[in-house]
Image (cartoon, rainbow, N blue to C red; front, side):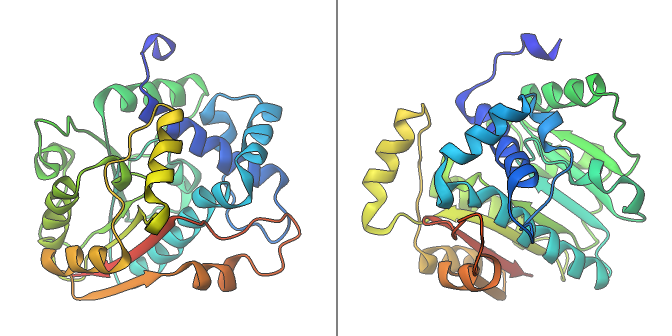
Length: 275
């Protein structure tokens, strides 16, 4: 049973991310930045606990999960209009896109890549809720220490000759720069027209404080590149059209005059790039 699987601190961050999405969906002021109708159920948390957890995160940390999901799904919609019909979610965690959009996926195939143990936990969780994964959703378990992303995707039917939209959210801070570089190298070799949207942690002169705070939660942060360093990594990997979303831009677009007090993330940054 999924409840018997021992989850790591990184796995627990996926559950917490779902709780934050749920908290915002339930109590965020209108207009909601992002709504996830399945986040509460899949997190396994009680409603009051998810709301309390979201509130206790503070207005900056609580916004990280909702704004990155909003930006990603907005960009995905634009990519679909360009004809992109493959969506790869790296480190999918408890992402619910394919479940929420089951009746609107059409020709879009969604590939969820994640640690085999946690992915199995998620699949059993979905089954226990009486939900069914749509046929367009393909699970691609990947032991990141022994497998490449290409090796994980191949059995799931991924077509490397067709463009793909890739999301990589809330993951890079747990990886070394070399590991980030390797993943971007794969993404940069995808078919022309492919796009990646990713988050990264830029602590600036507060990086050491950020690392220490994460350690109190049992989480180790390995990388915190600057915006220029991330741009260089993307360009080195073969991406040509690169955009960065600054905190000021996020504030203006998503957080202006919000009644719930949410503010743009202090340390989370987003980069978007097209091959």
